[in-house]
Amino acid sequence: MESSYATDLNQFRKIVITGGAGFIGSHLVDLLTAHYAGEIVVLDNLRRGNLDNLAKHTDCLQFVEGDIRSIEMVERVFNGADLVFHLAAQSNVLGAEQDLVYSFTTNVDGTFNVLRAAAAQGVSRVVFSSSREVYGDVTHLPVSESAPLAPKNAYGASKATGELYCRVFKRSGLDVRVLRLANVYGPRDHGRVIPLFVERALRGEPLILYGGDQILDFIWVGLVVEALVRAACHPALPEAVNVANSHGMTIRELAERVQAAVGSTVAIEVHPRREQEVLSFVGDATLARKLLNLPLPADPLFGLSEVIAWMSEQIQPS
Image 1 (tube, one colour):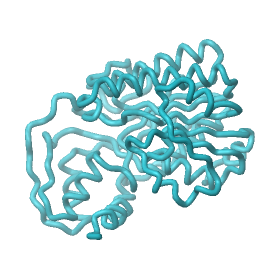
Image 2 (image 1 turned 180 degrees about the vertical axis):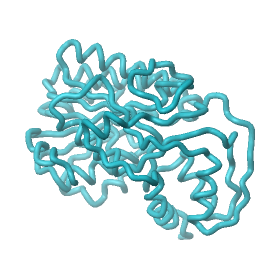
Image 3 (image 1 turned 45 degrees about the vertical axis):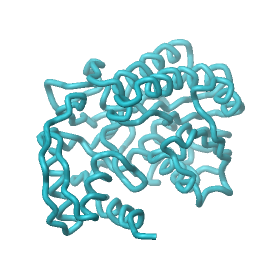
Image 4 (image 1 turned 30 degrees about the vertical axis):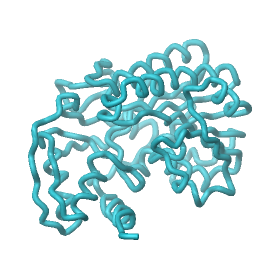
């Protein structure tokens, strides 16, 4: 990790990662285990997380299967912790629409439990992974952190509510840092646009575009976990920081990139756009560059080949 904050991790005796068996959480575990000698605890209910993601780290962390909707569970796991990375969530737009109750109880009630347990157990710092979905549909790009919270869908509303609770607890003295993540991609993800496109292209199936003109801001998971660690170790941050690449790309451009990278001539099919999805987002990454020293590449999809290699292994016949 090329970060001046790497050695600062050792100020923390115990780190807890909620959702640490999931996509982003397990990559964060990879980074922490390489640079941190203290105690690491992962709390995950394994609804989307997978223990295979942590298999190479079983000797250097403690895994607790549990749910952040249980305050007793969260308080028990947070006992003695100095730093909490809160990533556990119902983590996509369509999933939230399909199960509104789980989305609310996990993303709102669960985040409230994380914050009150952290305060009760004397946790020094909480890093909350929010989302670009809190902005909703915007009129100007790129979107800075000063834009109002105006979520368009249930997922964005749940994350915005979580942020508001972070503000409440911060005013009460809990050191909470909020990162608003753009469209994160990388190995171990599933059910979102890049892994869906890659899997379909590898199988020779058409790529389905719901609209196709939406503009998204993709960022590599390795940069996201760098940002999480740097945010945890920074002496002070503003209310929220975008973690984005500041490079817009349409869904059609993405589909064509996947076609080219896979070497596939599969068809691209255009279906009607889904109303709950945000039309355009490009994040202003000025603060991420300035405060977190986050290196942002010219090509946001520089890691696409790694996703293709990983997905190829997942779909091999047994």
